[in-house]
Amino acid sequence: MLNVFLKNHNYKYEVGELLKLFTTQFKFVDDDLNKDKILINELIIEDNLIISNTYIYENNNLKIRLEEKDVMSSLDEKILKRESKIVIKRSIFKVLKKIYKSFVPWGILTGIRPTKIVHELLDENKNKEEIDNILKVKYLMDKSKIDLAYNIAKVEREFIYPLNENKIALYVSIPFCPTRCVYCSFPSNTLKQWGHLKSDYLNALIKEIKGVGALIKKLNKEIESVYIGGGTPTTLDEKELDILMDSLYQNFDLNNIKEFTVEAGRPDTITKEKLKVLKYAKVSRISINPQTMNESTLIEIGRSHKVEDIVKCFNMARNLGFDNINMDIILGLLKETPSMVENTLKEISKLSPESLTVHTMAIKRASKLKENIQEYEFSQYMDMVKMIDISMDYAQRMGLNPYYMYRQKHMLGNLENIGYSKRGFECIYNIQIMEEKQSIFALGAGAISKIVYLDENRIERVPNVKNLEHYIKRVDEMIQKKEEEVL
Image 1 (tube, rainbow, N blue to C red):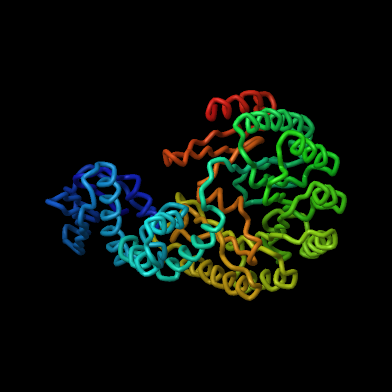
Image 2: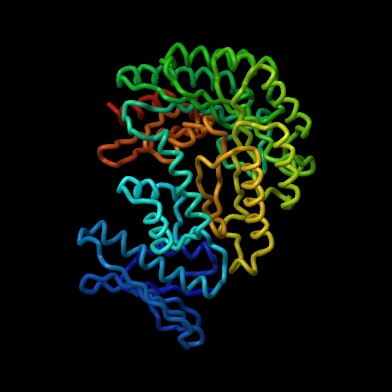
């Protein structure tokens, strides 16, 4: 157990998140009297300098001492606090790398959206060389991740800028699934247990659609993209899908939208009739998500379909005229090896989707991780790194380029999830939800609206309740909460 003592500051959250990149076997202590095994970090503000000293003691002997300093850019309290945290994290990070010798390519960044920093630097008219240097020196990022973040930010800017507060996105949640996959953390209710509520849920959802439709008209906002997710939206039958689509068109002006996405998701929910409904409703982008193309893994994760069903559904969609199909895969699924991931990507290459979303699954929740990466199944972690490299290689072979990214929290190294696409097939909704420069009005159980106030650099979240029965009973409240936020 590593004891941690913070001197002259109390940034426990930030230091704790950084420590979790290397170990979960630590605790904060109130003094530095016991020097059996302790990390001491001391903050000093002196003249125009921010100084962070980090010490490691073992058996009362000083093992490591490292000083990190930076010139204060401002005396503003908010800026000084932010810059102090960065200097503190740098000094602790360098010490931890000496102790654990771990591969942590994102440096001191513990948030999930590293491209935001790149956007801020680009807004300051920094060039590529300047940005590279800041990310390397200030945030200690590996060159591979610097290039990745920069390239994705450059693509995103084509869709984000110029900023327009009048444009919004619309999200609709269908929180039902045939079965619940073992790794799932999204709003998902199995049809076996909750299917009897589908009709009542759809009625409540349509009520919210009408209420929010009236609200958006009053605000005179223009909808740029629509995204129907879940769960699995295609757990609705063709008649229910048709009713949902009619309601959306009746209550929202969708004449100028640039993109309409529906997660068709699991092949065991896709039929020709449902795809025809989506095509008639002018859905421009669908996801058919295998997660893996290995039969044994599909069984392990609780999916009832086969690899051949994925291929059949993909070809069915192609034959009906869908020319923008995304496929999701997950790296690090139970018992999967790098060679199995390569098999998945070989099979997907044959189908040639317009986009591929690669998720890295957290190996285990942080509370279950062992003391450090070497003791915690180091080979499994490095396998994940290999899997990411394999997916990048195959994406490039398929003519797919990275266009959006977010990172997994609570896994050693904070590896990333990346969306790849062919040029011209980038998902606008995915970019906007990551970079948070556009308001998203979200409908349905578990959906969270994000209201962006550009002039104040502020975001307000308006969540809907997750529980299906509560949502059905309280849908009027869900509408009212949005009205109270924006009117």
